[in-house]
Length: 433
Image 1: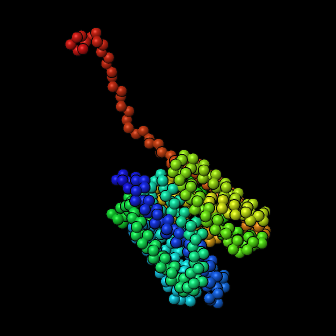
Image 2: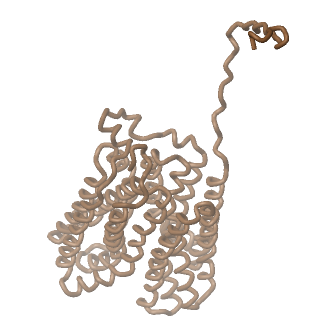
Image 3: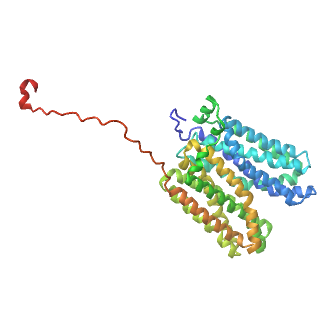
């Protein structure tokens, strides 16, 4: 970062992008394997899936819902230290899980510790990237998040191999060792020293300084993060109902699981391509983003009315690509709405709402399906995404109201105008000239 606080595009930042890509593979891979872990634990313990399922809910929920707390930590603690701490928490959780069969302890080891650890890494990564990129931030962030799709595609089959070969405890120990690699990756994410961190180090912060609540005075910001919350309600639905749709249509369990695989693959490709396009053609970024939002709204609607395996695969891929783009562009649009200095506060709100949406999305969709029918899940997703499209459009194109400048009363006495004397050249003579 230059002395003026303007990020220098690239440089060592590309090293940071590379290691963050690897970290997202690990984090997304673990999250994508939660269903497999649930199945193993149900067979190993006497608890039902409704109880064991809280492990995944805690992990995924805390991965985003702890963002306001982590946002405060970034004001006092360097982001690299936070990322290293998050990696250690992930590794410690799986290590301890290998030596216990107590379900409440497993809630802590496999749910709470990895969830908070993942958020420490993901939240810190954006804070680090903004020090190296500005115009190319969408591309850089998209390349990092491309690891999400790679992890979703590759890690679950690898985890199945670990469980078959080494058993439950052995697989947890190996995953713990893999998470220790993330400690090394975090050590390589050298952050630039932002002005806000310097200010926090130079003087103490009051309670009011820890979070800027004035952000909620901006109606465009409120509409944008509300749209983000509602979108994540819809985003959670396909991960449960696409495999159900496949099995109800008559496809095998393995074939139905491929719907989620191509969704993840589409997410990776979409993040990188749109990130590149955003940096290359910044003037059309808003319009292109809304076109993507339209595609995400319509992409899953045909799934409700078809039994074609190929069409469901195409719809899953398109939705995955669009959802990946939308999640990638959230930080960039927040910078445009509230400024880069307010990004930690704005992002903590967005991530908190993402966690809430992920938690309540499936229960809401299940309630709708019980009343209307199973095929209504994808119609529900379409309707919700349409509402998000409206909110995003208004937040990005409505002008923000500027506060009126108060009129200052005229209290100074009037000053008499000075008399002006005009002297012609003819009157002055040659000497004056």
